[in-house]
Length: 338
Image: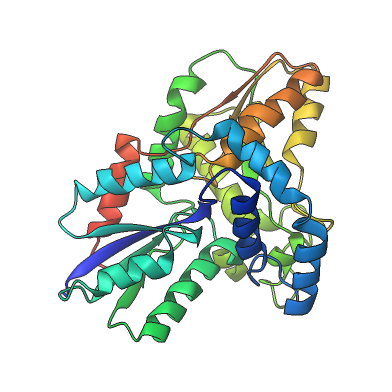
């Protein structure tokens, strides 16, 4: 077996919680053609004229509410995961972000300077497939290897949405919260425009064509985000023995006017509150690391929405972060005989 290294990849974060840093980050993020799937000129006009004039200031304020002395929670927690995995494996483990720092380019160049490394186990830390997460990371890594003519082979870890070890770790992370008194568990997944799902169904005869499309076996499910989040939910509910009427699924983090997967998380929380639900747990399985979308969007803004609608308490179940069981899972993947 060739000498290997590991590269863990997550989405990224601004370098600082100020408007200028957030503007640079958002420009890089939103100009990615896998994120806003429009021709370059139209994408440039939308980002420059509709997003960058106002959104960076608001987003910077949001980041400021969760920023710690150590820095961005996403970066700090990802570094802790990297360091913990490194202690369990006998190969180099690096960390990179698709947007911002540390970059995929800097990580691959660093690994290429280790003369005995020829294979890189490339682990996108996204349980579910989407072009805007998994594909863009992989394609960026391939472009960097080609551009710098690096003698590195990528061994890509596929989405792990129903991997038994991942589900085990997810349930164990939630267990201390599930034994408490609560009325409803909401699975809040990162949103995705419906168009991103539909384009992965070239025949146009399955995805989103009937309410139970995700439950009917089909070849497109290997790249269908909606099917995969539903599969994660079903696997979790089965293992945790959740009664069917005690949980539901929603999607958060919408951007723009396109039609997104629904229902929307905040709308669902308002509906639950108005129907008499008082104590809600929220889990975000699309994220393995706590970040702006969990710590600010759910634990702060979504909680305010739920309480204003008549609810009594909203509790965010932490992401896997650097929990011991999750560290072991990732370490096992690194050592797997690909």
